[in-house]
Length: 392
Image (cartoon, rainbow, N blue to C red; front, side, top):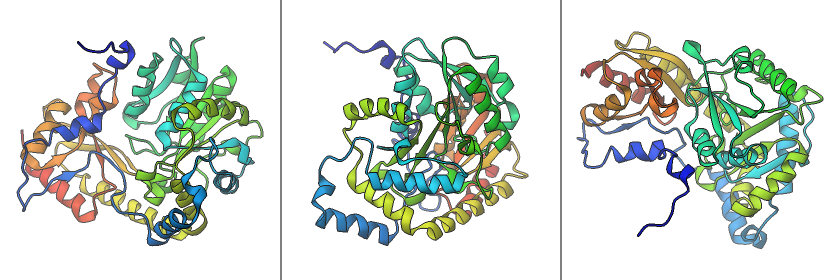
């Protein structure tokens, strides 16, 4: 006998990164050709020592760090985000317009729970971030794909044609996961104007904002005096401060919307991790130069990827930035088959484009995502060497 299963959950695909890890079962990698894992981009090193000491100090000497905290996060961290974001984006953000969550995925789930329910629609550009699609499927919310073509940059005019009375939000990720592209400020402004005109939300996931190659603010949306009620900004502290295991993310949105978010968070987590928030706050106050160095290294790896793939037979970069490269492949194999063979025959683990596309979309079968942030420049050169030397 098995328990009954929610049909929406049963229809949701398995977590892609976990599926890909299972391809490693039973495969051995010789010492002279160890596994190159470019399937997931997340820091593998611990946070800087000063941040770890701040967490340790709180764990040992701050009794409140082990208790429930405010559902929407520590007031000091909310205020710090509001102040730094106001300065960075040239706008006015109040602490009451910031919520802290258990990672950016929870931020997405929380805000979507306040905006849409079963039978509603949300527009996602393709290729999409698969966890966004998974959450919409679990909730019975229809995902409306917005094709981005060879540029991987979504077009607001094309999105306008997809809006219906059931549309509740448009979701953009910039710098993009999986595509790596940085959306121009003009693109974000066009989507903001579109969303406001239709009375729907524009959700901008800026998890990778700290690694944007451009100087200055990537958009001016927070400078709009009426950003509240249209714009929702999502962020993750995991990448900048190596806090993946502590799960700390953020939402910036209208305070009235966050009052609804509080209901969701109170049920699923009660409050974000106190120690993770303490670490994030310490990082915001003390690690700006260190984060700048991390950004420089990621940009150097991006340049190494662009150089390595410039003339690589059978492979073409479509987008490259932040933690990701998105590539077209011309090996003659569908990308899921290619991904499995590369594990066994080249010692490379990467994700097929089909994991980021609607089922049956032929584009996904000819595309791959490479998460290069955990591979140094020598590793990137080795990746290119293995791909050049492998043939179906």
